[in-house]
Amino acid sequence: MSTTAESLRDLHSLHQRAKALRDRLNSGPRTLAARQAALATRQAEVEAAKKALQDAKLHVKKHEHSLKGIESKIDELTIKLNQVKKNEEYKALQNQIAHDQNTKGKVEEDILNSLDGVETKSAEVARLEADLQKFASEVEALRKMIDDQSAAQKAQLAELEVAITQAETAIPEEHRDHYRRIVSRYGADALTACEDDSCHGCYTSITPQMKNELINNSGLTFCLSCGRLLYYVAPEPSTTKRTAKAR
Ligand SMILES: [Zn+2]
Image 1 (tube, rainbow, N blue to C red):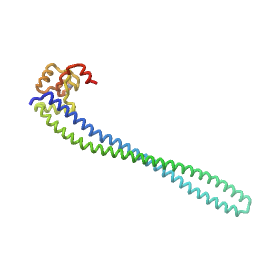
Image 2: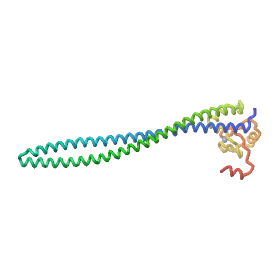
Image 3: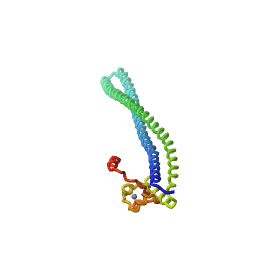
Image 4: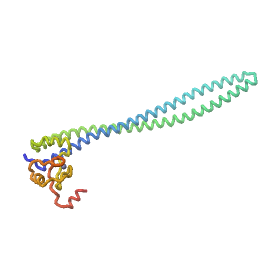
């Protein structure tokens, strides 16, 4: 069978469609992986906020414990104060009690401030957890969408691969090896249009003899510079039309 510009153009188009599908099949999992990494970062933020909350609660507990200690010490000192006879001892105890009362005040103030901190941190944890949940369900929805699409895309790709194999029968046996080599080198663009007397793959001009071959569909014509398989595209009749197309 003779190879026509049309059969080569169709084969090129099939290769390009297959490439576009492969690109989409690859980009989906990449996007998903990036989102999953962002999700892991947010999970770590939530864990850090929870830890800070736990620490703040522990801080309050410790101070409440020492407050109790100070209070019972003051109670004991007050009992002693009522029992001492000597004025000196009385004064010393009074000083000690005043000192402990002062410490007690400071600890109480610290507890109040820490309780404020606990409240703020609790709200922060709640906010981060809600955000995380929302983001996690978005990532899950994306994963599902990519999964669903990938099944359909894989089926389409399998169909295209069959179509490519069929379309490749247009390549004469003696050129198959060269064809395989340029496909493995250039992928979907191993075939290229020859328009305005130049290869669209590398923009090298073709010879008049090559142009004749291309117009007459006499065998396969490969670009002398890049090796791509060329197919002829006739020049468009008017320049106005070409300008419009270029936009
Ligand atoms: Zn070329």
